Image (cartoon, rainbow, N blue to C red; front, side):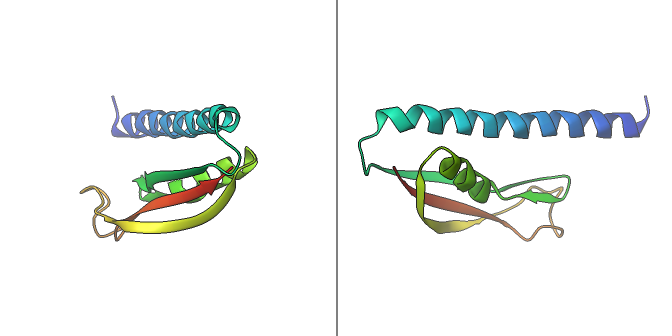
Length: 104
């Protein structure tokens, strides 16, 4: 098989994996909404990721998902910088790990 076939197959798998991750996060927030006390707080730790030299701003996407489920994002705290994989080295300088402070 040709090299391009594996690239496309891996790209499709990565895309499906990313989509599934954010669908799971959406389901998490849906479930938390009814279980949390009024004015309850969530401290959500996430790290951004990169696939095929494209950074996925996981923290920003999680914030949008939380807001779409009726939560208020109070703050995004940068916890640290995370090294990228060897495939991204020199292309992406490092990835942000964040703590997202969310209020019901």
